Amino acid sequence: MRPPRCSCDALLGLACALRLRLHNVCAASPRRGRALLERYDEARQHYADAIRVCTGMRFRPELALTRLELAELLLDHYPSEKKDALEHLDLAIKEFRDMKMRPSLERR
Image 1 (tube, rainbow, N blue to C red):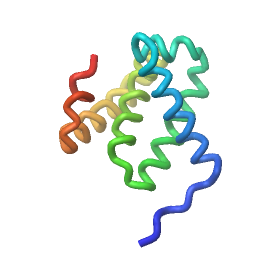
Image 2: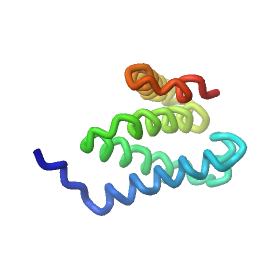
Image 3: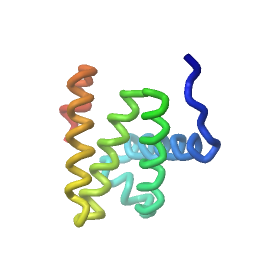
């Protein structure tokens, strides 16, 4: 079985989402990392691109982590989209449990 083909734009979106996560880890907290970037719409699009690419590649750990980051972004900066944020959070939690990613489940 051949892996799905990804466009350069999709791969760039994944790389940007990974960069956002690296930036968040290096900052004092994930919320602070995103606040430093202050480009929430762009970050949101990169997370959506990363979800699409990770789904196509069946890259479950990265998909769950990306859903968690997107949920946090939506809850912090798009309060009218709380329902979508909670759906992403529920999916991420389920995946973390299935993959036994305990540190991600214990994150605050």
